[in-house]
Amino acid sequence: MKQTILLASASQANLIPLLESTEGVLAPINQKYCKVFFIEQLEKAHVSSGAQTSKKVSESLDSQVEYEMGVEEYTKSHGIEVETLKKVETETLISESSVADLMVIDLQSAQHKSAPDWLNYLIEFSACPLLLLPGNVDVECLVAAHDASQETVKMMKGFLKLFNEDLRNLPLSLLMSDPESELEMEREKVFIKYLKVYFQNIGAQHLYDEAFPSLFRYVQNECDKPMLIVNTDLGRQILESTEQFETQILEHPIFIFKD
Image 1 (spheres, helix red, strand yellow):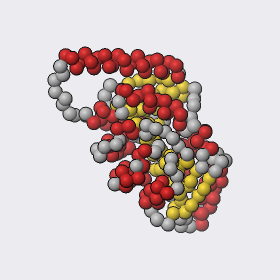
Image 2: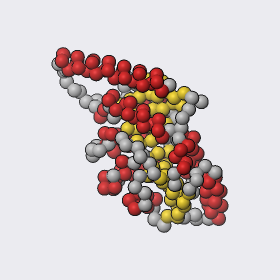
Image 3: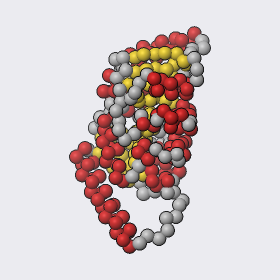
Image 4: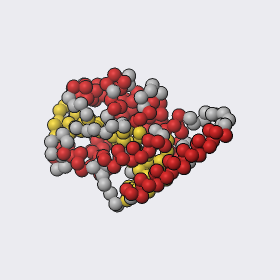
């Protein structure tokens, strides 16, 4: 089995730590092909940096050689193929993500107020699911938002396919919208029964508020180190909210499903 991963790394210096973090959370497979681009490329897009001095050019070349040697050594020892994308344009992002299994986004540079702009850009134009990954990946529970739609079922199937089986041993909290019909009640029962095949410890609770504020309250009060599993709409709401800075929600891994 071969998996194609798009890696949006904060910088060249952070690529190997990002690769190490993905190794810990993604499912181990026979072959992994990673296509890398750098968030600093997005931030500098269409901005002229002016002329460089010969000293800066020399330092840049030295840094590039060091980066390439380090990546080559790491990938050989871990059986990973890595290709660095030379430029990042909207057309490139759409084309590459259309054949990727997952895009992993490095949140190392997401601590300033312009971060949601490029995060929303990546979510908008990506054609594959996304994993927002902070620098320190320490997960003690899983929190998934379920809205009784078929997309949520696909979201959990995608999670099971992409992520390390060890995560299934963690408690899974399923935040569920209140069913509005007998059909939705029956689908909910079947869905929970399906998840119990894979997860050891499941807790389900109905939401009597919108999913967005309920998710924030849960993260604040119930689990210190969660991994969030959400659909695209909820992912956008998280990134566009002011609460993300108050709750520091971007310090936790977030899997955003896109079909």
